[in-house]
Image (cartoon, rainbow over all chains, first blue to last red):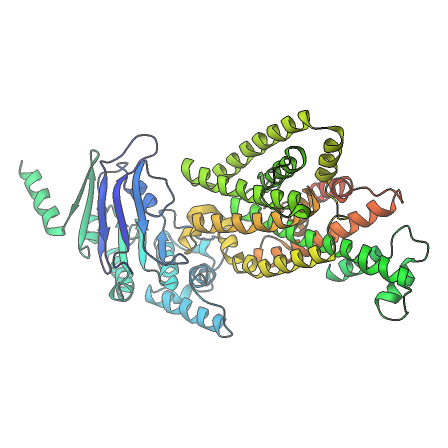
Length: 227
Length: 326
């Protein structure tokens, strides 16, 4: 059994033209990785390539998680069913990794309510998603992934549209899962939000990819500003 | 729908050229109310029952395979025929009939064995090429269409060099008929199809996620779209190959039955898969019964009857429905 959850070897991302030099790295349990870089540089493409939604131009991306539900993915557009209720949307995530049993429905309901209360949305369980604000929708999408109990979460700007208090609340809701060995890879525009929790930074800039610790990234940034 | 299918099946058992066996007599014998003579017994249990059972098994398998393919590729026009599975089977059968090339060494199963293996081979190629080019659903469909054309060209070339007898055999195979399989084959195919159905049902949740919003939505609910698409393609190809290897080309039921069911019960695959299976069985038994009785004693192959009867009904249903989309 491999300990790493993700391994990239000479991965080249892009659609027609390469967006980065070859990337080789691994991600182990309990890590929080933030992908930073200017807009349009390929951050989302990297995340989608890792999720196997986009074919790489070269190299390999291998996920070492359970095939059914081991990967949690929060897309930029959130992928919520607008006309369905909040609880129903979260149940879509909860159902994937559950084996059939007589108590399955009760367990699923319990999981849904637990995930919703973790992000502070349990009072909106029976509301249709279309009536929620942008920030509330992000919390529902996060709750859906929490209910799924994945081993690796890929999140595309899931903290945007959230104020400081709610962003902290959402991250705190993810922590218990991280403590159990789940890892989080997120694309974030709000550096201060993300860097507060990150253990690692992947930076994409001008086709160059860097895998840095948070301290190394901050140091490089300061040096760049000084120059 | 189940009751209707059972009723039509019972009527189908009573339809045929024998003057000794009308519908009522057959129904009384089947229900154990009357004793059958040896001739009646042979006609019912050895001739008509395998045919009706094969119609039910074939309808269930092909309609379920069609619904699975349409769901996992997100395209309502997909069926075992359009995806090249049937073309692979035709190529295998043509090779066995014209060239005498057979993968299986058992003479009686030379054509069926070839058809089965070549149709699975097509799916293997589709999956491999689909992965090579891209991983979208469209790439699987496009590769399937390309293979259909290639297989069609090879079959046409083989027909060009075939003798009259071989051409006749090939044409007969391509019509799709329920008269070929005997009871042992029907039971074997039936057991396999019944064994595969629970797996199809287990993937209905994943299919719902794929059908609701495509790959991005599916993966956000924890469903791995690439893996589930590959698995479902293999399962549906297995179901299709098992049936058309023994019956020949029967395509329409795989396209029409899921659509007809969708118009009645909606898009939830937890209900749509069993509904398509029952609808497929009904369509097959009904079309075969009409095909056997309309110009009796001439039997029109079920593949032709399905298109003749089902086509207009299908178009009527589609034109009548308002706003029911896949």
